[in-house]
Image (cartoon, rainbow, N blue to C red):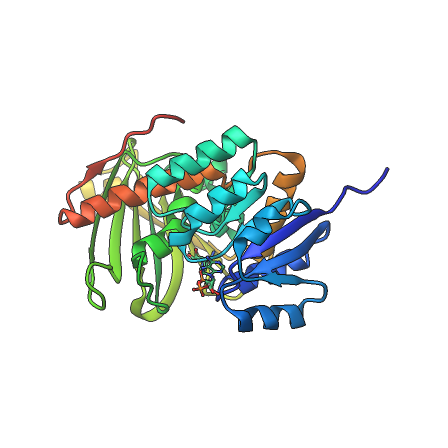
Length: 344
Ligand SMILES: NC(=O)c1ccc[n+]([C@@H]2O[C@H](COP(=O)([O-])OP(=O)(O)OC[C@H]3O[C@@H](n4cnc5c(N)ncnc54)[C@H](O)[C@@H]3O)[C@@H](O)[C@H]2O)c1
């Protein structure tokens, strides 16, 4: 059997996150990173000296013109994603775009349509749905081990990079929204959010978002780049068990609590009716592979097999619709906004 031909890649954007993508894609078996593009020469010089054989350019058009490039990785600021991704699709390339896919659902829809019409793969960098610990969480939810999931809450805060176009919610919450929708396997029908802009006018530094699901499941997401802690965690409260995922922990990222409140058959008082259960706390062994490596591998697999990726353009579009509803709620002082889903 002859080996599968290598997937030829090019990447636009080698900033803080782009360099991690380059490190991973460069070392993926069956892929060849041919060409990278960045607006800054120094960044390109550094990349060329670090990765043998890498060609560089400052104009993305060079990538779109190249017939020997099959797929393009886009890791530039979100305001540039639409134009770059659209051009990449129009030039016949499969595309991986960092989160958020774009900055409006209208643009998201146009991009998804363009990719579908052209038969191109479009994947969004929703890294949490490739995180080995999150796949384990998904297993606990789907197997019924947690019982009925009552509610979920996530925190993604730090004292970090302050962006000047998208706010902290648009920058961070795509991770948690995509993870929560993946874990629960359903979409919210109502979204509310409050937030506040302290550092720059109109760009919220902190946001508290709530997702309401039709079956009364609740999810809450706290995002901020103005916080003393670096927290990346998620708690799932189920009727049988509860789970805490702490991504800041190096190895013991998941704790399963056999805790709950069970109704009793024989009781004299209401206090006796609900009995508290506090059983074992289990710390499962986890696959410790790098989530980003898994994500890159998944993209290459989609390119090769033509099977849509887990975080395809449509799932990116759902995340945008949720973000837009949350922004609308935030702009109106936190009033809930109904979200209607045309499909799935
Ligand atoms: N998945 C994650 O965990 C994660 C983490 C951080 C950032 N991100 C995402 O990655 C993307 C990039 O973020 P970042 O923090 O690396 O930003 P950054 O500002 O550090 O880097 C952006 C790079 O893009 C280059 N660039 C901008 N416009 C360009 C253009 N038109 N052509 C060529 N180069 C251009 C800049 O020179 C810069 O080097 C964003 O979408 C961000 O949301 C994802």
